[in-house]
Length: 329
Image (tube, rainbow, N blue to C red; front, side):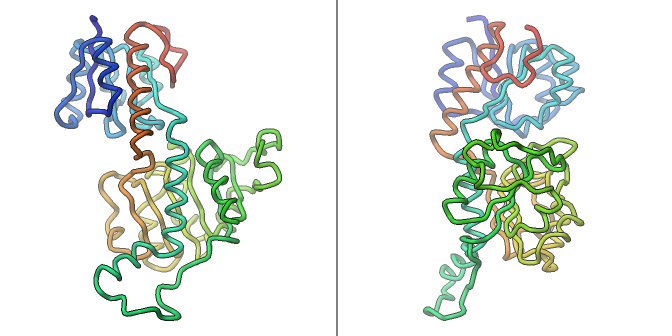
C-alpha cells in the first residue's frame, strides 16, 4: 500500500475506489495552477499523477518531476509533452476507445443542430416569438443527400460515417490531412464502396458539412485557417469535435460573420474555456462545452481505465493503454 496517487480533479467511480484499494490517494480540491502542479510533481511524494486536459505537463515541469508516470483522463494527450516524458523516463497512459460512440453522437448532433438551426429555434420559442406555423419561418438545410467530409478517418470519424450513411449522406474523407496517403479497400473494411477518399483540398471544396477528426499536433495546428475557410462552399458548415486549436478560431469568427461559410458546430475551442472574441454572439453557431464524452457510462469507464493505468505504472508495469510504451520502468 506504499503507492501514492495525485488526482488533479476528482474523477467518477470506480476510479477513486480502485486507486484507494491500491494505495494512498490525494485529490486536489480545485484544479491546480501550473506552479502548484509543478511543485507537487517535483515533491517526490507521488508515484503517478492523474491529469486532465487542462493540466499542462510540459518540458520544464517534467524535467523536475519525480514521477513514475502520468495517467491522462482523456484520449487526447496534447497537454503532455510526451517526448519530454519519455526522455525523463515517465510513462504516459490514456483512455482510448471508450468514447468513440459518444463523441460520434455529438458530431451528428452538431450536424443536425446546425442544419436545422436548433439553438436559434429554441430561443425563438422561449422568447415568445413563435406566432404560429409559417411557410418560410426558420428554414434550415437538408442533411439527407448532403456531402459530409471527414477530416481524418480513425475510430470516431468511422463512427460518424456509420451514422451519416444512415441519414443518406454522401460521405467523403481524407485520412489524416494534410497527408493524402491512399487507403485501401481492405483498410476501409465495412466502408469499402460506401465512402470515398479525396485529397484534403477537394474535401474542403466539396463538403456541405466538414467534420474534423484529427489529433492535435504541430501538423494539424490551424489546419482550418482563413484560406481553407475561403475555399469552402458559402453554404458549408464546419463541425469540430476534435481539438480547438485545429481551427484558427479568430479566422472562423470572421468567416461566419462575413458569410464566407454558413455556420459552425463546435464542441471544442482554441483557448478553452475562453471563446474567440465575437463567437458567442454569432447566431449561425451551435456551441457546446466540450461534452463529446459526457455520458455517465463513458466517463465512468474513462475513470476506470485511468485508475488501472495509474496502478500499473505505480507497480512497475506498462499501463493498459500506453502512449509511450518504449519507456522502461
